[in-house]
View 1 (cartoon, rainbow, N blue to C red):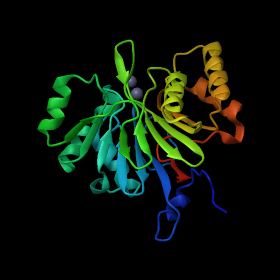
View 2: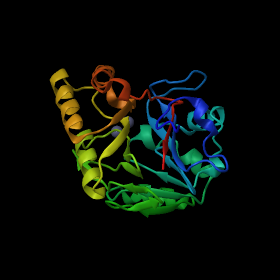
View 3: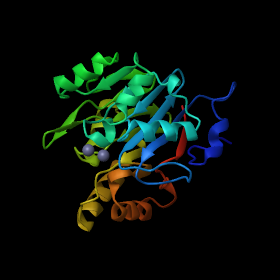
View 4: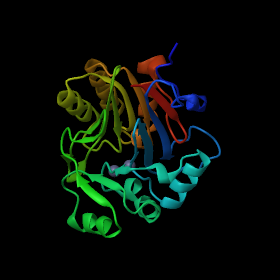
Length: 259
Ligand SMILES: [Zn+2]
Ligand SMILES: [Zn+2]
C-alpha cells in the first residue's frame, strides 16, 4: 500500500525506475530542526522535486549553510533547474548568490514587485529571471499564487496539484496564511491537502492563532507542516488541532506525496 505522506528519510526509495511518480519535498534550511547532523539557521529553503523538474523554493539566509545541508542530505545542486523566491527578505534570498555561482544559468522565478535592482543583479549573475503571475506555470503540476502584498511586502507561494489535493508551500506567509490558501484554492478550484512552510504566527496572540486554526479547518486543509516563523505557541496549537494529520517538518524533513 502506498504511504500518502511520510517524513521519514526512508522514503528515499521512491523515484526509482518503475515507481509511481511523486512530489518530494526536502527542507534544506530552517531554524526548526527535524533531523540531527544539519546546520539550522533562521530562514527557510525547501527542495521541490516533481518528475522532470527540481525547483528550489527559497534559499535560506546564507549559501554556505544551504550548500552544506544539501551535501549532508545528498542533494546535488547541479540537479536544480530553477529557484522560486517567495519574497525579498534576506532569510529567504541570502543563499541565492552562492547557488548562482554554482548554477549560473538556472531560472529564477520572482513575483511582480521585486525591485528592478534585485532583478538586474540576479540577471547579471547569469540567471534566467522570470516573472510568475497568479496561476503561472513552473513545471507540470506546479504553479504559483502570484504576488500577494501586505504592508509593502510582496510574497508568492508555490502550489503543487496532486490527486489528494493541493500542496501549498509558503515562505513567511506575510500576506496571511489563510489568504494564501484561499488564493491557491480559488486559482485551481481544488482543496488543500498539505500546507508546508512558515505561517508567520510567531507574534500572534492565542486568540489570533485560534482564529487562523478555525479558518484553515473550515477551508478543509487536510494536513499541516508548519516551521520557520510559525512560532512555538502556534505550532503547538496546530499539532493539537490536526492530531495525526500534523506533519513534523523542519530542517531535514522529507515529505513524499504521490502524483
Ligand atoms: Zn519575511
Ligand atoms: Zn522568513
